[in-house]
Each structure stands twice: as C-alpha cells, then as structure tokens.
Image 1 (cartoon, rainbow, N blue to C red):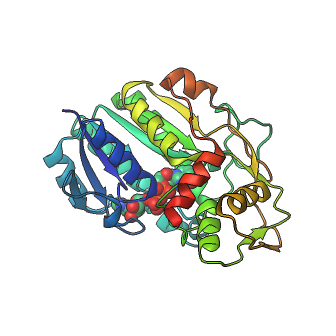
Image 2: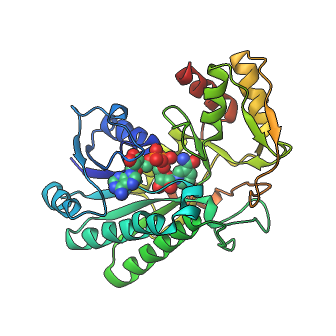
Length: 304
Ligand SMILES: NC(=O)c1ccc[n+]([C@@H]2O[C@H](COP(=O)([O-])OP(=O)(O)OC[C@H]3O[C@@H](n4cnc5c(N)ncnc54)[C@H](O)[C@@H]3O)[C@@H](O)[C@H]2O)c1
C-alpha cells in the first residue's frame, strides 16, 4: 500500500483529502500542530496522527519513522491579514516549512510533493481567465511566501530531482471550513445565515471570485499523485460568481430573508478573478464537477 503523509491534515482541505485517500486504500499519516485545524476533523482510528510542527525537529523523526511515498503539503499560515501584521511568522511557517518538507523529502527519498499554493500569487489580474503564464505579483506576504515556496520546489526538482506538482487553488469552500478565519466568505455567510445574523459585504458586492468546492480540490490532489511532473496548475471551477450572487444563492437555498450589510470596500481587494484550468485538465485528467449551487447546498447542509 502506498503511504501518503499530509501536512496540515487536520485542517479544512487536508482533512477532506485524508478521508478520500482512506477510501481509496492508501495508508495515510497526518502531521499537524492543531494551530487552526481540529482533531475532530479526522478519524484517528484509521490513520496515523502526529501532533507536530513542521518547523520543529520532531518533524524529521516522523518522516524517518513513517517513510512516506508522497507528501501532500497543506500546512500553512493561511491568514492574509496576519501575514501583513506578522510577516516573519508567515515566512517561518510558509517558506521555511516548505523548505523543511523539501529537505526531508530529499533525505528520505519521497517520490513526490504535492503543494497547496494559491491564486493570490497573481495579484491584480492583467487579463481573465488567468492562466499559469500570467505574471505573479502578489499583494500580500502570504501570496509572496507561497510564490517563494513554488520557486524552491522548482529548484529542488532541478538540483535534487525531487518531483512536485503545485496546485494554485482559487477560493475553496465546503463543509468544515473555519468561519472564524479569514478568506472563507462562503463559511462566513453560511454561519451568519444559520445564526440569523446579517453578514457584511465589502464594497458593492459586484466583485467576482472563482469558487471551487472542496471535493474538486481533493480530486486534483489525488490525481496529482499519479499524473503530472513539475507543473504549476490552477485549481478552480472556472466560473465567475459575484459576492451578491453568492449571497442570493445562499438566501434561496436556506430560505432566509436576512439582508446583508454593505460597508466600504477593503483596500487592495482585487475586483475580479477567474482561473483557466485547461492545463490542469490536460495534465491531471481532472475536471471540476461541483457547480456553485450544488456546492453551496452541501455546505449549508453541514452548517445546519
Ligand atoms: N481555503 C482556501 O480557500 C485556500 C485557497 C488557496 C490556498 N489554500 C491553501 O490550502 C492549504 C490548506 O488550507 P485550509 O483552508 O485547509 O486551511 P486550514 O487552516 O484549515 O488548514 C491548515 C492546517 O495546517 C495546520 N498547520 C498550520 N501551521 C502548521 C505548522 N507549523 N505545523 C503543522 N501544521 C500546521 C493547521 O493546524 C491546519 O490544520 C493551505 O496551504 C492554504 O494556504 C487554501
């Protein structure tokens, strides 16, 4: 049985990847320091869990003992605002953490690293849909640290022949996303609606995002275990949804009449986003399956 180690496997996306891999008869281990993830997101009886920081020395002991074939690297400092207020911490977890993953993969002969990157590496789009040849010009230390990690992975392949696939996720949503953290507008809206609280919309709500349901992100990670070598790929549904449309969909699915509160737009927020996933489909034989309405129903079921 092939062994997959997931860093950040107790988090939103990592825990869904773990669940799917177990169903596909992979042997799974998780390394997580539980800084934002939760032990309740995983089934400890079916996998090996190591409470450990990827920056700490204990991480090497885990890799040495477990000898994974693959590492799916999800662990990160994911909060954009925090990355601005404390970019040394962001650098420590996101850049040095990835370097630790690379270094240990070299030492213990891991076959491939699958890396969770982000569409935040692009910054303000020069054109839509954004393909992976688009200029990378991040607007936050978070985007910059992910971009730096991608570049280290490219170097590691050239210098040490460590294989990788980088997956640049769009706006991921789905069950278990932490509404108390930044970035998950769907979880924030769903949570607000479930509690009868009016959610806040920044600006006029006509800004668009390319939302992707977590199951489609999971299937891309699984495909990347088999296919692709050294590519950077976008992971998204490939449709633009405005924040107003998103909220109207949530209202109609949940039957709520609660109206949002509009406040000033946040400086630096991009106006539109749409990712081109053609290269991903060709490389990974992957296609997103869950459209926004289906994905929102599944997400709202979870929040209710
Ligand atoms: N959610 C999104 O919309 C989105 C979009 C683009 C990229 N991503 C990337 O996907 C990955 C997963 O994101 P998520 O939304 O599941 O976030 P999350 O916060 O739910 O998961 C991150 C996990 O990493 C763990 N972690 C953090 N620092 C660690 C450390 N030093 N050592 C060990 N574990 C550590 C946390 O406890 C958590 O379980 C991240 O790399 C993130 O940057 C997410």
